[in-house]
Length: 219
Image 1: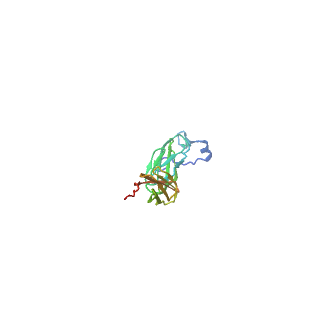
Image 2: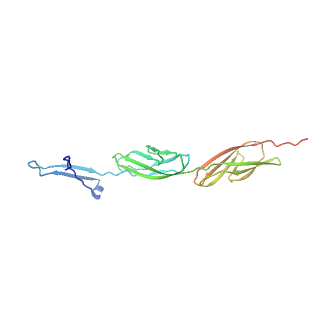
Image 3: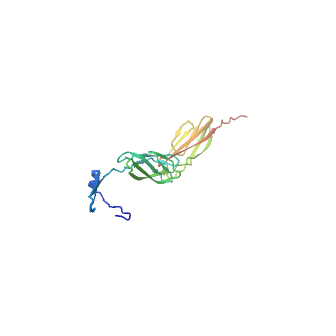
């Protein structure tokens, strides 16, 4: 008995009893003086805890990453999911979407509760890659009624650039970092550069190129 006069005892179930799914304990009082002995039966049921499993999509800075919950209830049904994204933000939806403010590696945890009140938690790492910064310069040279424009790449990326794509205002698409192109028609062209980093993050910039009419000699 404890200090309050209540009976306290401890019992650790065996693995076989857990595997059976239930346990019955009988408490019998005896040595009761003139009172007859008394017995009480308590039955325990063992239920499975949730199995936590989730997938994190690849992430680029400034873009939403998807957190997909594949957890199983174990027993009963899943009644709640609690996310911790590792940057001070949390979520309580079954599946979540989150945008990180800085590149880096974040430890994400998911806690799942089933209808029997059992809780399980697991963690994964979310990797957020820095975005490249698209940029380019151009210079022109007139030659025989053709304006030759030289394009020079000025993009940067912390993890390296894997590919380039220039859209020359609908004239042509070029996949080189640096190149020259002959514009034969006057007009305004919107030149776009798309750069993609080694880790699949991309950035786009558009600049305006104006081709003026060629001068006409006369005297």
